[in-house]
Amino acid sequence: MKNILVPTDFSKNADNALYYAIELAKKENAKLILLHAYNIKYESGAVPYSLIAEETAGLKKESNKQLKESCLKITHAGKIKYESLSIEGFTVDVILNISKEKEIDMVVMGTKGATGFSNVIFGSNTAKIIEKAKCPIIAVPEDASFQSIKKITYATSYNHSDFRALKKIVEIAEPFNAQINVLHISDNIESPEIEKGLMKAFMEEVNHKIQYNNISFQIMRGENIEDALEEYIEEGSTNMLVMSTHHRNFFDKIFGKSVTKHMAYHTKIPLMAFHYNSKTSVKIF
Image 1 (cartoon, rainbow, N blue to C red):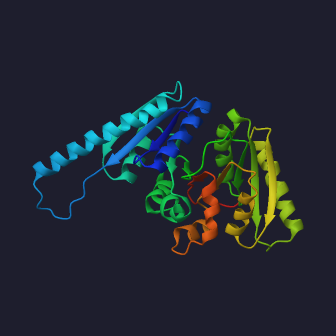
Image 2: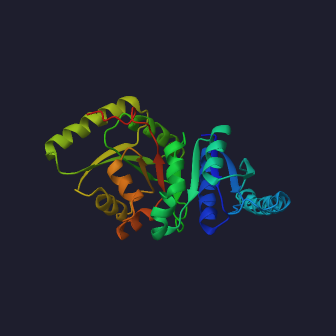
Image 3: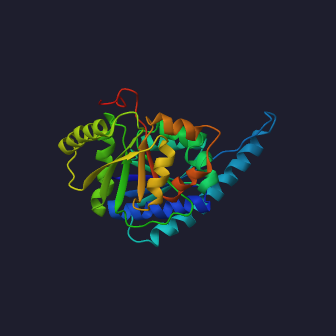
């Protein structure tokens, strides 16, 4: 991993994500790119250009000032390579453009706790970034403090894209010597014997294609994927949950308006989201 992008609006949530990214960068020997996007919105087209230019210059100056203060948090943390960028434009467009231009390996973003889970982690902006970005996105909860990563859980539906995702997860896990737990939530449609057979076949594929000696495999039964994940996270044995956007049942409910209160459990640990196209998201069996 070479480059980690950290978008910031200088809020407490963004700062928390920055602290998390700092610790990742230390362990991964990666460069941090701190980014702030700003723009002025006018409802009327009759605003003089001189006024727009003046206010834009003011925003630029304030952005650079606050970025400088944020960069102090990085320098105080130790020897970490970094740069800061202040760019005019819409947040999503700026993040996607910089991700491509700077060959970003990962984006680390802050979130706002239980209420903000639907609005921030999978709100319109982040949903668009997850959908269009070529790299994974880590959403860091407001109150989550960085702990040495000991266990990363990947929720699988036995898709071809899982192998690519797992290779990326290995990059994060390896410096921490962390366990990768491959978790499948069974919806009780198949019998336990069939589920065990599917997991065994998938396990053999993973062990053949993924070179990492600390991978475990687990099946949980539950008709509701959110409830099952809630139960799993509540156990407190994992430091990061990883999912791909082809988990449609899960993501469709998150994008929807009726997000139940028990999803607050998901805001207790960072969540990494991958986006894959339909071709790579095809089920293996």
